[in-house]
Image 1: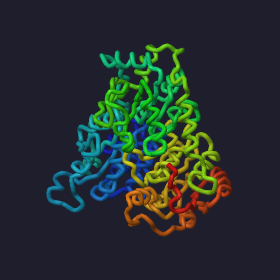
Image 2: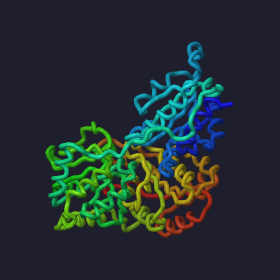
Image 3: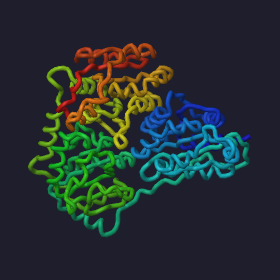
Image 4: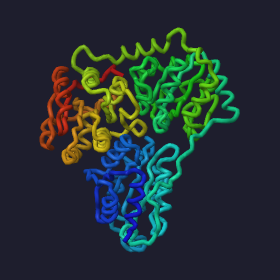
Length: 537
C-alpha cells in the first residue's frame, strides 16, 4: 500500500535527503510518518526558522537539498524568515506544508489561509500536491530547487493527499534535470579573450555562484597560473585557501577593507567576475567602477540587479569560461609587476590585528589559532560578523556559513547544529552576539537532545552594537539598542551544556581547547565592553 506521503518522501530520499527538520501539527502527521519510513530522520526544533537553518547547514555538509516541514497556518507563517533567507542566499530548500483539503477549506476557516499566495514572492516555485501527479511534481520541485541559482521550493500537501492510498507509479531513481555546463560563445567571448590576453593587472572577484558550482579548484589553478589576485564575497570565502598570497579575503560589509580593495580593483585593466552575485554587498559596491571599465562577467544566470556595468558577459559555467580564457593567454605573462596586491594584502592584515588588551578581534584571532584548520564556523548578523569575517581565514569553501544576503539574525546557532549533525566530525563554532543568541535560546534544548558538541562563542556587550554604531553616527539618541546582561553560562548549564564567562585570552585558549574534547555543547560567553567594535571594521 503506497500513500501520497510515501511518494513525496521516497523522491526526497532519492535526491540524497536524509534529514527533515521542523515542528509537527495534526495536518502533517502522515507526511512526517512517510518521511520516517523512507529513511529521513525527523529533527524536532523549537521554531520553524531554526529548522530551516539547520536544513541549510546540512546542505552545506552533504550537498542534498534541505527539507523543512511545517504545519498549516502559524507553522507556515513562522517560517517566512528562513524561506526568504533561502531565496536571497541561494539555498535549495524543500518546504513541505500541511493544509486542509480544498473542499473543506470552503467552509472551515480555523488557521486556514492561502499558503501559496503568501510564499510565492520568496520561492522559486510553489506546488499544490495532487494524487496521480506526485512523481512528476517532485521531479519538478527538486529540479527547480537545484537549477541555476538554488533556492526554496514550496509544496503544499493536503491531508487527503498525504494519507491517500494511490496506484500511481513512481521512480525512486533521480529523474530531475541537471543543468549542463554551459560554454561561452558569441561576440562577448571575443571581447573577453582579448581583454584577458593583454591584461597587465587582472583581478578576480568570486561569489556564491562559484561556490555552488564547485569551481574552487578551477579558480585556484587559474589564479596561480596567471598571478591573479582574488577577492571574494563572504559566502565565497575559502574558494582559494585564504592563507595563499593571492587571496585578498572576503569583502562586502567592511568600509575599512573597502578603502583598500576598491581602489585596487579600479587600477585593474581586467576585472573578472566569477559567479559573483552582489546581493551580499553593501552600498560601497554599487557602481564600484566606471560604466566602461574592462569588466568580464562569468555568470550561469541572467543578471538583472543593476549594481554594476560590465564590458563582456559570458553566460557560462565558471570552470568552462576559465578554461577558454586560460587558452588565450601566455603562461609567462604575470600581472601586477609592481606588487600592488601583495601590498593590499599586507595592509588588510594590519587593519584587523588583535587589540593590545582583551577585545573582540583578540578573541577571534585566539579561536582561529586554537581551532583546527578544518573547523567550520557560522556567524550571526551583527558587528561581530563583519569583524570575524575579515579575520577568520578559511582553507576551503563552505567553512564559514552565514546569512550574507538577507543578513538575518538567529541563524548561526542552527546553521552550526545542522552542519555538525549531518557532517558529523569537523569541529563547529557558532559566532553570535548576545541579542542574536537570545532570539533562539530554545534551540539549546534541541542541541542538548541531539548530543552534538557545537561550540558557541557569544560576544556579550549588552547592546545591538552595529545598530547602536549607526545610530550614533547619525547623531540620534540612544533608543532601543541597549539591554541588561544575561547570565549565559548559567543558561547553558540549565540546558545540559558547559558554560563559562571569558574575559581574557588565557581563559579563552583553555576553554576552547577543552571544548574540542567535550561530547556536549560548550558556550563561551566572551564579555566585552560596549562600543568595543568602534573603529574595528
